[in-house]
Image (cartoon, rainbow, N blue to C red; front, side, top):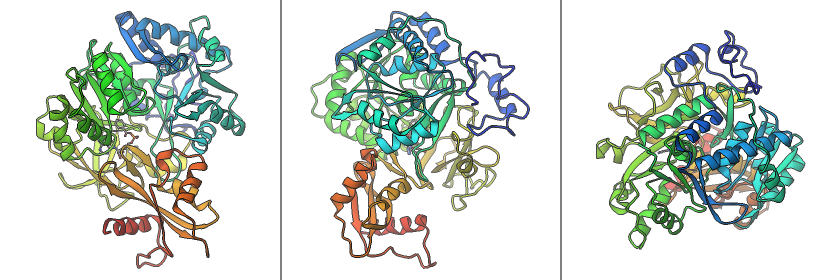
Length: 570
Ligand code: OOB
């Protein structure tokens, strides 16, 4: 493991700075080259701080202020925890996890809905030196098995039944299949209450430049990749996000998207709000009724949403009796916010629009709150850091290097390298060779146009991914599930334009000889294979054979392009 064993706080013996660290990165993850790491430290971006010590600093400054408001998984009641209470809870949880045998450096799959306990649980794991692996509540058996086995997770933290799904039973069935899983911790159970009541004690602080957690990629070729982030790199993006979004101690940040996603976590999200001494309010659901009630009750000042949700809120704002006047900023991102929607947000909700374009791999763009309206409405912002290196390269050459840049103003594929963007996925050497250039730039797969101001406009994608209103679907993963059906000979999943979601999915299916599988049957089949509901094809179309592109045998990539064009033309 490169994740820094407990106690190795000295930067002298840090694996990131050894002379051969780029040569012998080990199989787990690719560290930044020593000279870049040294520069990020010298610039003050990496400060040698872990999430645990960072929280301790916040407690010293904001002790009695409200940190977290949300519904408790244990009681079903709303709770309100100060910074001091959050700190104590996470110290107890850390001790509890260690007492149950969780060791520093071990991975722990966290699958929690938007419940108050999420925040202390994650800090508890960090303080125990464990690495949370952030699954979404939508993920199901096949995805959880993949994450847990790929990360060789030691435990799962989840809830019991929630929104008609038995998470605890699901987690146990995953544990039956993945040999590394020794524990299923169910927040809200008596057993978990015991764990959470452990006597707090000082535990060794992990290495700030070691891995802190694993996020999930949206996935393009097959299953989601795991994204290794360090304390130092992530905290840099958190501090800057809080500054850019102008969070203050009296700000109130509302989380409506799934808590564990990178966007509500850090853009500026839960962590950005905590950094500023602000309050985090967790909404159990994203719908306007629930969210507007919380905005009114808690005096919410800021919230981050995806475009379809922004559109729904704009609609609902016209007929709500709720007082939304405290809302200052609505961040919109995760998928492209079209100009029309962008223009409606400020008048309907009475707040400033802030566009955000980010990725769990690192790089985040924000429009600035004092940017001219035109830039706020028509671009997705500019990078967090002056040290984010941005290259827009030839989009027709998938292997274009970081020097293959297109003329200014022309659309191209976005590459990036910087102080909080990973240099490789977790345990994915083969994939890394394609996803990163030889000089360490991450191929985002996004097609952008760079404005002279440094703002980018996202104009499309070169990666094989469907963005279903912010939820990412990898066609290959879904195609593989479809092809497991005995009546399916071949399948291709494409994105088709959708007014509400931006894109929805359509599966073209060539049936096996003589078979005529019903659409509902195929959708049920995919769902029962244990995948997140957002990956179940919105539509299934049977076709006798796939079109060819004129060059003989078609690649899946070309095929999807042809089918997508057909779908577009009617
Ligand atoms: C966020 O993170 P991921 O990892 O779920 O997805 C990243 C991808 C980007 O590469 C891009 O394709 C798309 O999502 N995306 C956008 C966008 N924001 C994200 N495409 C167009 N316009 C935007 N504003 O989605 C994420 C992470 C942190 C902050 C915000 C979003």
